[in-house]
Length: 365
Image (cartoon, rainbow, N blue to C red; front, side, top):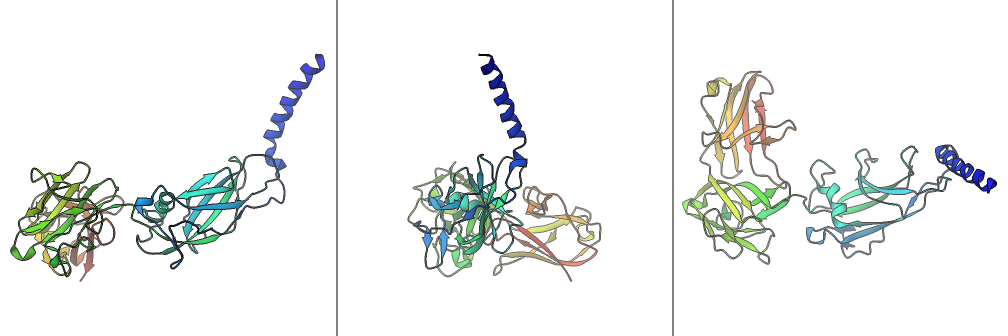
């Protein structure tokens, strides 16, 4: 019994000592993990383009299971394998983590692969376009040890947008392209930056002077739910008829979850600020609309170096564009500073071509 009482504490001390000194016991020549070539057996892999074709409808499906040969740190402990991704040829300077596992098999869902690839501010590839990416494995033990990196495999991905799209087919679309009531026309779309089914956009529904009729659909076809007029001018219905507004240029908001909508007729945009032509935030400097380009422009705007301004609709402050701390133009942003003293052409671009976002450009004449 005396020996047993001495032996147990001794083992405990030995275990603690080994744990504390584990870093010193790692092999001088550890074996890095080896990332195997992707299997490409998923139905989402397109052999013609050599790319994974991702879609929101398959977000929870496994798109690929990445397999790796084990790393060997020369010490018996749990190894965590982390799958990293970056644009091809970028040497993982801006890598994002996709998933991790303590096994050598790392299944990846469509959403896990799509999110770092397509999200704004991350890898920023263009939704609907095939792009190449490098993937690798980072093997680590604990937090105090230098990780080991695998070889690199290159994959191709065709992502879907992480922002939501709401197509707006109607009889006004001839102002944008040939043919009306076409959900697939890509420049008559509202966007949901947070992908939360709350959409916004600006559309020219002038329609040759006649009233404009339209509906909403989340897909570029008529095979899914399309939303029309509800019980009032601010409500939508999945079985409703056409929504009708007087001919004009509109800011449109829609919420597909709450089945609500609003339309704001915009008759003019103007620049207001400390510049002389505005008489120190008193008068709007008018902007001219180009029905072909869908841009609003003011030319010959004289700015002093210290001038600031905003661009507002309808001579009121309900809708007024400024710039936020991230350099994005929003209706909640602060004043827009003059780049320097001079005469400028200032353009307001509300088209949101390809992704959410509004733009103000200032070109010195």
